Length: 104
Image (cartoon, rainbow, N blue to C red; front, side, top):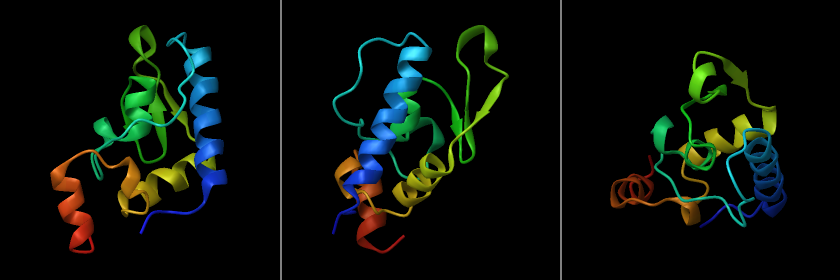
């Protein structure tokens, strides 16, 4: 069953759109993109920001690639919950869906 905390998703989407605006990444997103569980480069946040992420933050794109920006706690919690399979509606691959079905 999917995660029911819509406020968390709304808060994460609002944060993503603030970052997208600050980084000049184009129009705001209407929803978070689908991603891969347990794969930092393909999580919804990495896809939305078009950059590399780690569990605690994201790297600034382009010339500032080496600069790590720490996530707010609620975004880090979202990523951990996504990797645990608590947002199946945001999972894009058969591999990730199979992991969720066996409880990983």
